[in-house]
Length: 83
Image (tube, rainbow, N blue to C red):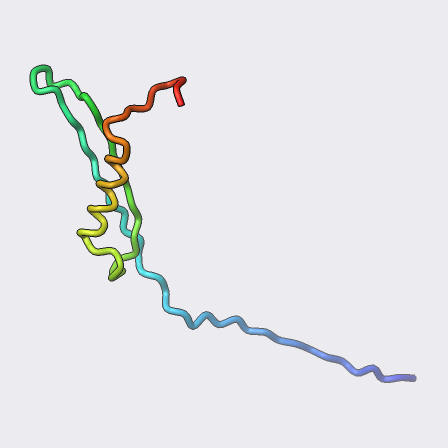
């Protein structure tokens, strides 16, 4: 009779990292209207998601990024069927 013994293992996964802060979504909407008719000539929006309390994303930086994204290639409009 031989004795091979026995082995048991146990692993515990403990996450000690700090939970991430909440995501904050900011949206910038722009509508340019014809003064005479009140009909929209151009509309657009841009959104960004940042972490609450992130020092890298100040209100000014967020506004600049949104306006750059929104007005990139302005006033070029998307025309269906044309690249």
